[in-house]
Length: 211
Image 1: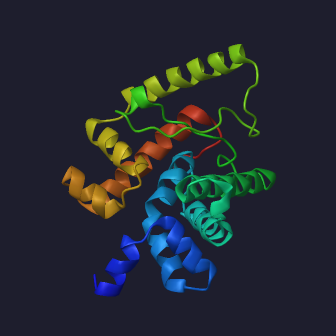
Image 2: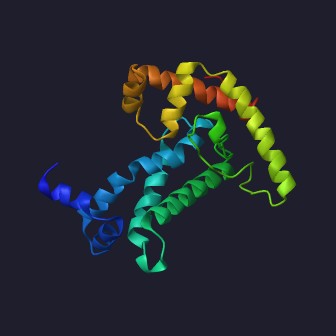
């Protein structure tokens, strides 16, 4: 990293946003690199539902860029909080569009709860059609049914697959996961594909092919 890059990385998010708003593309690029992993963390549970490409990560990146360009520090919200909201909103919009085009199973939310995956938590809405249940009793029943499904799923994962899943949900690249689990990136990719099929079989039986 040269002196200029080091200077950029030492600057706060808010300072970089102000520079980006004045047309500083280097500042914008620094923020994109800084929050690239957050985009992957937000997007990956949806891919586990059955996505075969990284189109949603591109949508998340667009949400991040929009956040950088629209951020107003006078709103009293930290940029990180604002960026995550923009990323998730962009992802949800993309999923709704997929649902209208009948692209299943990206029209459902998947949530991985802390007790099931060793502290790695992704919180999303429960159920289809993007509705949060308003009745507390219904919310509790929905959560319990979901947790039971995930307990069954975890029981079908090998130890290797469970380790890969935890790293994957933390936004690590295949190369980074491979280094963590001491396997090749190809082995990691194969494990992720197996996990996706197992998730799809539990959440969308009869709707997702085995291929």
